Image 1 (cartoon, rainbow, N blue to C red):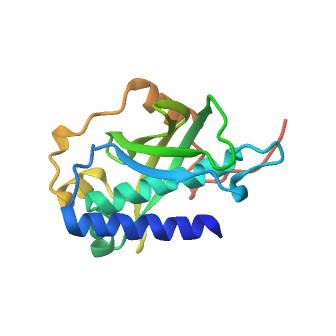
Image 2: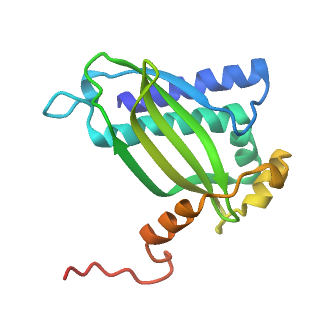
Length: 187
């Protein structure tokens, strides 16, 4: 439940900042300050590896709200989904340790946006996550990034294309389409 309360708090703060300051540039680094709570810990008393993913969601929610994407999603009946993600760990976060979730859109192709998230303490990266996300229509179907950028008034040419390794990574780890079979068979 604590992630639910954190989510609501982050959204509330981001919405206030959006109303007060207006939208931020979609390629700005967003920062959310957090503290490692007892419910974030695993049996060895450092942050559980799965919790990082939930807390990095807060960075995405903050960016969605503060860039104005959240409002565009509401208007068009869209919602974001994660297609792929890969996380790397460098150091552990411990109980009551303050850290910052830094989040930034780093690229986009025709179907997806690529983001980087970092857990940072004192300027040092403790964990890093790369995410490939898409926007889906509530009525069905995938939102093309050109449609999203048009709705935001963002020049598509100003959006960096993904690096070659990102495209290869997304292809290498992709599962079949939800319309294709994907049987669970172990060798």
